[in-house]
Image (tube, rainbow, N blue to C red; front, side, top):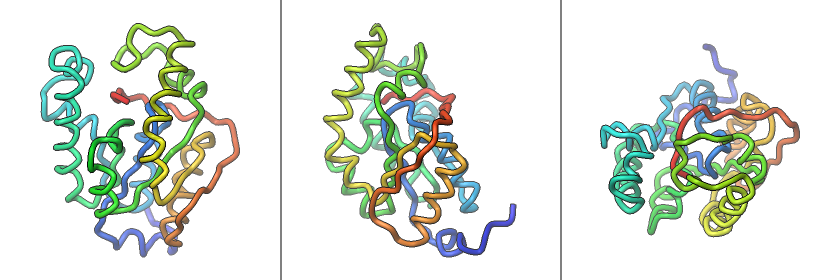
Length: 203
């Protein structure tokens, strides 16, 4: 696919681009589209964890606990960061001790945002969300609000913040323009088209 001329400078950069945000926000959906526009590979830290462990994230949580998952997650980020890829990170990855500093030193961080009520509707009854296991809709919303509040100081350090409530292609295009401009800040997107993730992430 031929890329518009204003994408060129971003394509030439070697640093990875990190997409962060809560589970269900659409990091994998937007990330794959962003990577295609930039001529880069796309990677997902949760998929890398599963590859390394030979098990699903739900199975890792059930047998080894969250601490083991987070250790594998940290190793996965290290493995993926050398490739200059667009990388979708698990929802809690950036809140690991020292992680935000590691990411900032390597490449731009893009924070995809959506309200917890929207996230719960997108996630539905997905059994692969261990942090939401056994909770009804109301309790899931409260759990996501709590997690978001805990993670906000880390998310807020992202170079770019995007409201992920629009069409994923439009969101990817806006991220490209902001990266090209070297922007730091918040670029809200209007619109109600939902973003389906279609992938399991730990959150």
